[in-house]
Image 1 (cartoon, rainbow, N blue to C red):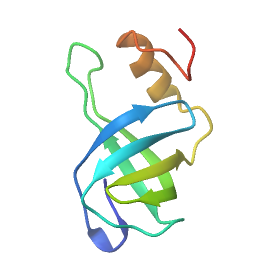
Image 2 (cartoon, rainbow, N blue to C red):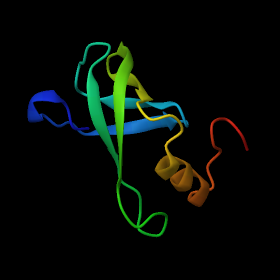
Image 3 (spheres, helix red, strand yellow):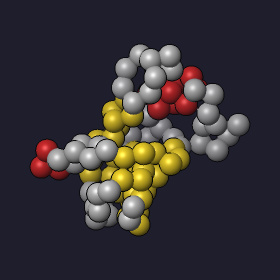
Image 4 (cartoon, one colour):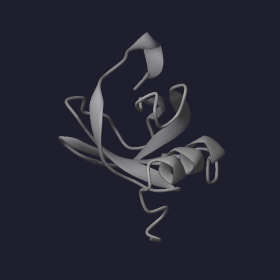
Length: 91
């Protein structure tokens, strides 16, 4: 995650949907913090990393609930489809 003031943190997505994700990380961030989330996937799934703008909508340390700033990001839909994971609870 790329945070304001050039900070970055690593985390693990515990779940993901077309509207947001739950990310486990050591950072304690206030609600409405904006960030860029970098999703790394194996090259067999997608050829490049995916970066999505997000903001914190729920902060319950050690987890952050984030919502994507773009409605239904296409890159995320492609990743979920390629990985055979259910998209937005469908499947």
